[in-house]
Amino acid sequence: MARFGSNKFKITKRELQSILDALKRKGFKTIGPTVSKDAIVYEEIDSLNDLPIGIGDEQEAGSYRLKKRTDATLFGFASSPHSWKQFLFPAQEKIFSIHQPTEKTSPPLIDPSVRQDPPLAFIGVRSCDLQAIAIQNRVFLEGPYSHAGYKSKAKGLFILAVNCAYPSATCFCSSMGTGPRAKSGFDLLVTEILNGQKEPFYLIEAGSSQGEEIIAQIEKTDATEEDLKKEKDVIQNAEKQIHRRIETQGIKELFYNNLQHPRWEEIAQRCLSCANCTFVCPTCFCSTLIDIPKKAQEIERWMVWDSCFTLNFTHTPAGSVRKSVLSRYRQWMTHKLASWIDQFGISGCVGCGRCITWCPVGIDITEEAEIIRKTSPVKTPS
Image: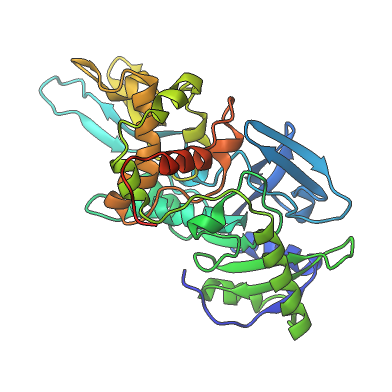
């Protein structure tokens, strides 16, 4: 989904609802943010009334709370503890079933498990998560082997993105080059603008032919120069709210040259190896396979999320390769910020800040990267 033209239109909530209605008429299952159990999560929605109207959030290292806003914004929050990967790469997914025929001499029958579910429409995807989806597409769809289940879900995916106006204190997308403005990877892009009013209006633009087709079905007016200035102000104000950052210049060499840095031991003394950071991360893709006996002659093979923080993830007949918390945390952070670049040509971190917010002990990847850089005995380019 490449970015199309620069035509932007002004719409209200009513027209935004018309977009949802148009998507549902086309057979899409619409997924968007909603409030559940004191958190904003992504679930199936039917109307704008399902969205977190007038709800914001407060995030810090190891801390997440919802708060009531004084306006009627639909997207007045930052990142969710959920990421969109759960819909394309589910936490549990059956890969196939193996049936052993009654005749023992007959070979086993393998039944692939690729479901034909309705196409998905993601509503309210932020720029950092657009980049995360693009990264997971590279992992699961590109190369000599693609993931059949992921491919079936990603096929026909429609994305309505939202420019981020209210980043949290744990966000650092601007230093990773992934936000807060969305630049590509969407079918439609919306900017929510309050302009001192309680009820917002929206600027919308298409990023694909699918998006243009939807826009053609709704009432709209051309965005004025004043509207475009207000949109620019929204993005600039968001950028000013982002204070955490990672210096990415020479970052791959920085971590490769500091595998024995004493800071790893200090981090390991705090890290619980709970795997929260990997499960909330929108790009982590570690998984394992388990076989579940169903009947005397049938076994199901499932793929389930796993984490490089678990002791058994690197288990071999000789034991675990990474026995210490130090080695597991170092593996995660070095892979995310360094060796991922060698594998996929891009960093595995999009700066969403979820790993900081949802770390029970508040370990901050931006802080740790900065400490290693400042105390590195090996100078890296800056």
